Length: 336
Image 1 (cartoon, rainbow, N blue to C red):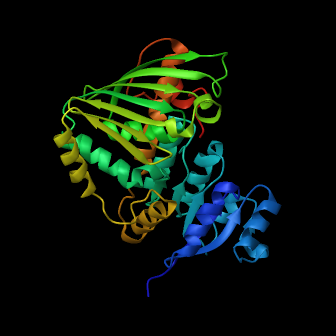
Image 2 (cartoon, rainbow, N blue to C red):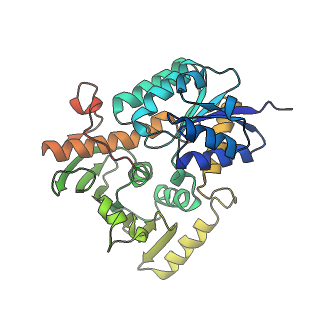
């Protein structure tokens, strides 16, 4: 019989509920403990999942990661403590699944990656949009060349999800310019940026939390537009809908039919279960997860470059070097 992977969850807030449900539902895992700085919250969560709060509720993550009855840690705490929890877990020999955003600076990301590598543990980052069949099909479509030359890619929204998807779909960015519009409050202002991808594609973002959470904008407008020589498409990230257009109706229909043959397995639904199963597979087989620490770092570098360009009023180039002041202090990265 295969040994079960025993899991502890750090951070007993709302997101931990979903993590706990998934870990407890899978045959190959055993949920062992919760950790939260608020003892009552850790105790309530432990009891809610049938655990003995006396042994399954912790308040110090340093103690939790040193427990012999835990093999892996799922980090659902605030992103400002992701780095220190990850490093402590790696040094204790525990595998790590960490929520997005991975960290609050490139320096923290690199420290996390280095700690995982030095201790030979898996580090995976939660980005569920990479596991959804629609997005996987779009990536295959872009890479196939069926859209013809892609000229413009646009991101509309604000969350780290869309920035990660933008970078994942279109590849490395060579430079970015950006401007803030508002009263100086990064979490409320609009950020407009123009990117040049290494592939030659021009991308631009129109981003603000007001677009996502305030009327008259709708959550269904949150997405990515791609303009190609032969086809146009818009991906609604929160509605998981693809809007397709093309001048040649036959070619459009043929492309849609081709895409339907890709990623037909029922488990490509972008769920947390997909991510956890991928993480457990990496732990069990010594392979890399689909979203490694290096992959999770990409969205942090992109948003760091956007912030640098907007705040310095100068074009920012990639990669961002360790000697760059924004490497360690990105000026309040987007959190959601």
